[in-house]
Image 1 (cartoon, rainbow, N blue to C red):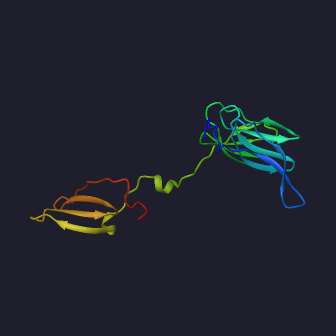
Image 2 (tube, rainbow, N blue to C red):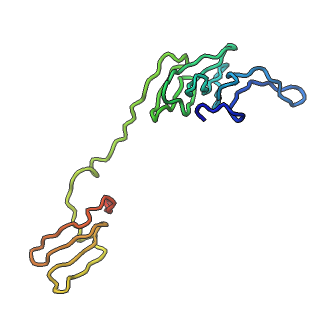
Image 3 (cartoon, rainbow, N blue to C red):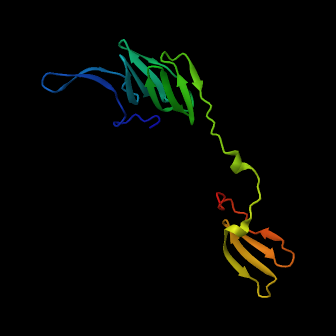
Length: 173
């Protein structure tokens, strides 16, 4: 929708119901040459996304006037949510918080903890998880499939080599 100005561009109108179950327009929120979408009310203020300056930014409309809250230049606001404590918005793949007056914008740092148990190098007896086994013709070597990997083992020395070292092996076993 970026820079789209055709007949299907989004518009936001404030209306009120009439006695005969119709809607009476009160005001149009964004200029006619802009896309406006995702309206959300909080008390008497309407928050919405508009691309009036060419990039989707967050606006609020209160006391019969609109004001731009964010001023992103390259990547616009994709979505947002509002509540009594402020706004949360998604922009350029990041999550931001914004005060209701638009003066404090902060990018959140999101960390996903991992289980150190799964990241540590460990030795596992693959023989307990063998699903297939095949001997060479002379019986000196064999191939075993264990935990999703293929191993070649020497019957005399006992040494084995992981032939596949696949990242998709059954690590949870």
